[in-house]
Image (cartoon, rainbow, N blue to C red; front, side, top):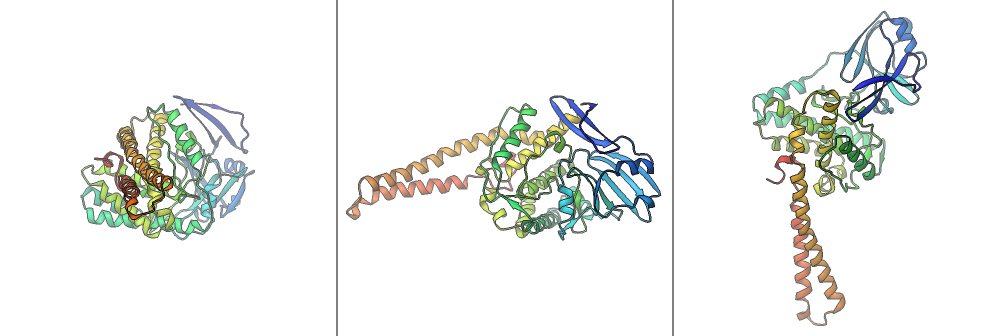
Length: 404
């Protein structure tokens, strides 16, 4: 992707770059220059601050380093600060979560906004505690199923706890049209040879979601909120998301770890532990069977979206086929075909219920001997519908195992 400067308005000391190529396009906002304290004073001069920020007159030194999610500056005053730039942020998501006082979150302590969007966020330097991640990697490598399941259950319960607390802050109705529109846009940009649309459940309302969460974000029994991933620039979120999408992000990160560390381990039991951990603390409706129901989309359609996001990032970076996303996507067509074939059973079930009701309406039984035929239709139709529901793959089954 090649970049050119655009004339889009920017804060003082920043520039906008439009990156385009390979059928993809995105815009990023970055400092023109940041090599000394004077540069820093310039770029923050027109920004709106929130929370705790370093006092500009007490800054002793600044150093910078580029990361895959944007520039990071180390700022020294009487304490050490880390300033993380948000080159493709389009909202105030991070400041909203940070200011919500959620007990299981390690938030940003402050930051700067411009025209309502987060552009710089701060952490006070502290010792990173990645024991969750390190222990999980170690147990997966050693094929220690029992310990791995315990760690995954704990991570799931922490995420569920976050969702329980965020439920009281803000929820809005599910947004299936925009969710399907987002998936459609990703498929078009990637020229996908398949399409997938979900009905989605009303028990999956929109929340203040974490959007992208990985096991490396778990520290000291809490979740360190992180900056948006590159895909949020290539496919800008135009909607809020449900809690189950956060879970799918973590489920997909588990797939990445298994692929990288030990692809011989049974991922089904590991997914089950993570899901059960989440269910143990998440709001009851959000963790219901209906919310996970695969024929409505459930967890699996959000895993599909996670795979598409991996592919679009790899395409932009020209970093080669991302695994296990590519392997997972190879099973989409067979998964959809099986679900479509299963609908025949549902159709027969509804036909049985219809014929049973029709026979009662057209010929109201006057004697007990007239009841068997309607009852047979009702019983057969009901049985087929229940059987159809049981055919839906459980959420702990990945796409490649859902119908084996």
